[in-house]
Length: 230
View 1 (spheres, rainbow, N blue to C red):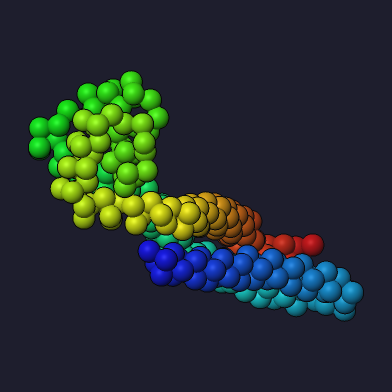
View 2 (view 1 turned 45 degrees about the vertical axis):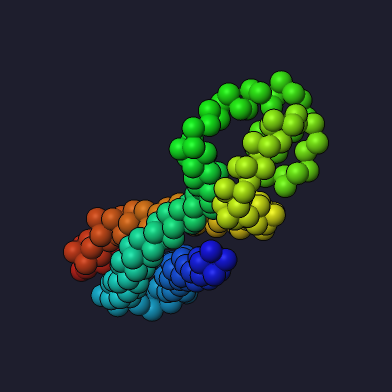
């Protein structure tokens, strides 16, 4: 599980870099366009309308291609982030199930031997001190159970020796499991945030593309800077 979470962390780091590259690239491409179009103002008196038209066409078409590349590249990245987020959630859930599965298995085994677990829990609660389950897993550490209950516990401990050892081994490492579970949930949360960022970036790029393709077509530019344009 630790190796699996390390791999998730590595994948998340790479995906963060991928989204960052496209975000920064988009900003740089738009800033480059603005810079070049502003630069042409210094030479506007020397430019013929047709020359100005070609500058606009070249820059707008170049930006459209760059944005289309980033938009298309984000599609598989979003799919990878979605899978990673789901995998991290599954890892956290699996860790939650480890001890529950062991305890459920022990309960089922005890029930097969004819023990009424609910009744036993009530009996031990009425005695006070350790509960039925605390007595079972304590290895004799609970001292307030009556003799009959102690004998029952010893018998069950003998029959469930392997399962109890497994449970106690896992329980002794709960802090380790809790740390792994926290890491899995943190990775899932960060992947979720990254997923939102990637989707928002793709939507912003798509809106910009729609605006450019609707209002800055070659025909629109020719109409503006052609012989009859401004």
